[in-house]
Image 1 (spheres, rainbow over the protein chains, first blue to last red):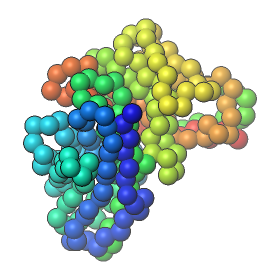
Image 2 (cartoon, one colour):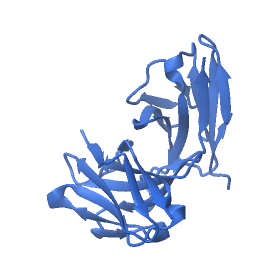
Image 3 (tube, chains in turn red, green):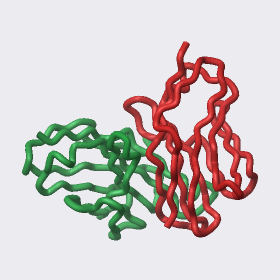
Length: 114
Length: 115
């Protein structure tokens, strides 16, 4: 069964600094991987997803993630944090091939300090 | 398009009361999901549906029932609410096939407090 581990439940960065949110997965087959963002008191929005077309995936709001099979990782990065990036970020995995379900990590709350 | 909508936005129940949460989507999606979100636990799947008239259990189904009588609606019922069901409930939907396959679209959530 697939699972996702997000390292660090809270990450704090200064405005303008690099954002790095870590996600490791386990899956018995090559997975689809997702990053979702949740702003306060809102639902989840898709940031980006990996479906094997390219290992470096670019998403909305300047975020990107790199799929590394050897490290079973899909870390999310943004070169320069903005105050508006403060939110909770969730990594999720599904088995390739039309699986009905996503498995979510426990989330990482990002704080951006002025 | 409204996307995924949830009713109500907030509700307070007493232990033992029942209620139904409604999820509606106007994207003609086949698949629909109910999750609960608790601090430090991420999102956990309660029940899901792969089409009208079909439902299946997720990770934490106990104490909940669901129905999918119409393709656009997915109802989550609590027959006898318990304080452990205090949570934020999210509905999501996705298409069965096509380029956006497997991307789930989420509603704004329902905050439920059980006293």
